[in-house]
Amino acid sequence: MKFSIDFYFGGATAAFQAEGAVKEDNKGQVLWEPFLERQGRFDPEPACDFYHRYPEDLKLSHDFGLNSIRISIAWARIFPIGAGKPEQAGVDYYHQMFAECRKNGIEPFVTLHHFDTPETLHQAGDWLNPDNIEKYVAYAKFCFQEFSEINYWITINEPTSMAVQQYTTGTFPPGEKYNFHKTFQAEHNLNLAHARVVNAFKEMGIAGQIGVVHALQTVYPFDPAKDGDIHAAKLQDTLDNRVFLDGTLAGEYGTETLALMNEILAANQQAEITINPSEMDELKQAAQQLDFVGVNYYFSKYMKEYHGISETVHNGTGQKGSSISRLQGIGESGVPDGIEMTDWDWPINPQGLYDQLERIKTNYPLVKDLYITENGLGLKEEKPAAGKILDDQKRIDYIRLHLAEVLRAINDGINVKGYFVWSLQDMFSWTNGYNKRYGLFFVDFETQQRYPKKSAHWFKKITETGELPE
Ligand code: BG6
Image 1 (cartoon, helix red, strand yellow):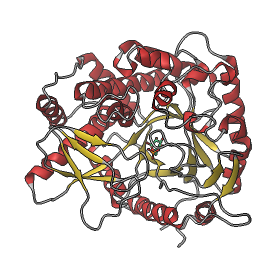
Image 2 (cartoon, helix red, strand yellow; image 1 turned 180 degrees about the vertical axis):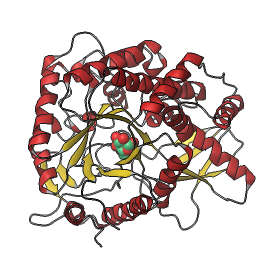
Image 3 (cartoon, protein in one colour; image 1 turned 90 degrees about the horizontal axis):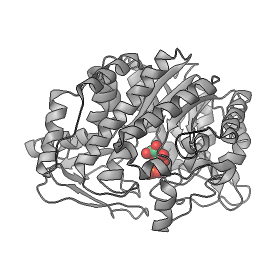
């Protein structure tokens, strides 16, 4: 079993994590800038300076056999305060960068929103404010009309990461914790924002395809023989996955999804969310028209029954075993014997990727094509000595095991058409800074020099043969 000749292999990036140049060409501020400044943990500038170095990175992509890339447009480069008059410098930049992709034979998969809401709109209530949804739709329509060179559009990257980390774990700005009402309301509003953009895309008759990217965390009961653990897994799955899968892939929330959501809200004495019936029509229409789904998969979760108050500690340093996740009315995360953990406490379970793909095929029959839009391993790495190649065998092993699950899924009739490694080159991690590196290319953040890692050479062999090398 091999990957087909037209399979997309690429590196994934995101505007705010890669571009740097946060104040250049009248770019507007995004929600992270004041948040990171208050935290004082790291500076999002210069990132890996993709804004200036994209020709080099795209050439490297080409030289290492990649035929595609995931890139996002920074909303605040086009509309510095989220709406109004477009900023020509930003528009020109993306045209030039997309042209450079074509020059290198690289197909760009372009995300409209990758965690970088303009600060002005964040201050105005972020995704909880329906007016911001309209501004997002206007921005998307502008991009569809302007960037006719794009074939693959993605509405939103990982809506779950936005909603859950903004209002449940507090690791994304505004940093609010345990507000499940806001979390679920933001989840529904993100589904609605996505749906309106898909429907607009189709109404406008834009050539090309449109999809959405979900972070899927496969949730298992810690002890499959315990009813309490089985139920905790369903509750966590509702928070992380189900509301988005139902909302975007089926266009309706299942009875069980709604019941589990309301159970979490009731257990936290928080009000139910508002869902207008006409919004459900919009969700349905979008699900029927959606061209593809992107799956970002890194880890699984193993849930135990838990009846205490919420307590979460984020491991943002790579100190193994420093995280805690116990959510009131949901459950507690545990680590079963035999499951390897990353330094950031993410349980490694390649089969979780297969299980998610299989679940989508079985439960969401409207889905057409699938892509793995992110998968990879964060490691602490040092610059290689002169003339040496950085040996990231652990990353190779991780990617190989996950790609084997992708091949298994394809073999079982699941229509996966591409795989993007997170990340193309090293950049910063939103909640972990610069010391969690994922790239195929090592970046010296002082000099911005790129150094292909062993994984880049290994990955090149797959792109040449379609087979998984040892
Ligand atoms: C996904 C995001 O959540 O995972 C990326 O789309 C992100 O932007 C990646 O960087 C890895 O997560 P982290 O927290 O390790 O940086």
